[in-house]
Image 1: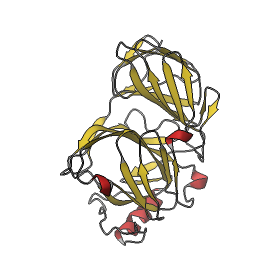
Image 2 (image 1 turned 45 degrees about the vertical axis):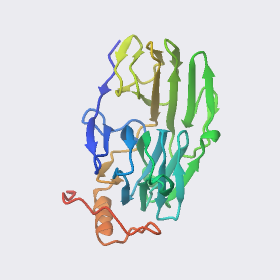
Image 3 (image 1 turned 180 degrees about the horizontal axis):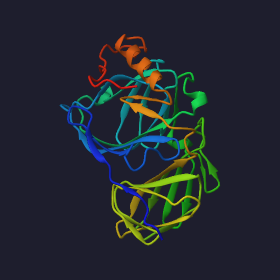
Image 4 (image 1 turned 180 degrees about the vertical axis):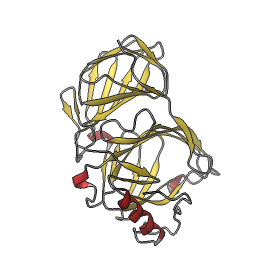
Length: 294
């Protein structure tokens, strides 16, 4: 059997010493289904002196998907949304024609020490919806369906699997699962989407007799079911996927589009302060000095 493509990513400092492991985009793989961006952050200890807040910044042409295993983040955006993001919930923000948001420590935890751990994905919007109206939808953890098997739990965060359908609405066929396997437990993962990949969050596992190390994104063979088996300590992993993108995407800074000109327009709009403001916030992340080339 052909060994799956494995991506271990690279570390990216987002500022203030807050470092993430970035798996997508990669030279070997630009996307999996609609997902063009994959950051795994933490577990990281947030102390009172930590400067991990992400100041207001813009997006176009994509949807951000934020999921926590542990911790808490306060989301605010230019639509006026204010949402405390907690473990197990799905937070889907459609940028469309443009949105501005911040991700911060909740004020109630200003003097506390806690741990943040989670994943942020970007899903490129279909070309017909790249200029959609921006929106933010929070789906609480209690509303996410789950499949319970022998030694395994599968939460269907987005899409459909094991006879269950997530309530999270998307603009293209999309798959996102949170899988937990007990020590030595196995799971037969059926074909759920044309493109699929598996990411090992906290430990390695065996995928079709091939060892996959921890913190590795392994692309799954199209049209073939996969067998997963946990090691002696168990494992948590996520599965992402969906229909292939309807054409190439350009990514620069926080902007995604099928058009390079549209990215240039968005960059100029942010520089001119025309993309909106997060109510109650005055800070903003400036445009990077390295300009996008058409």
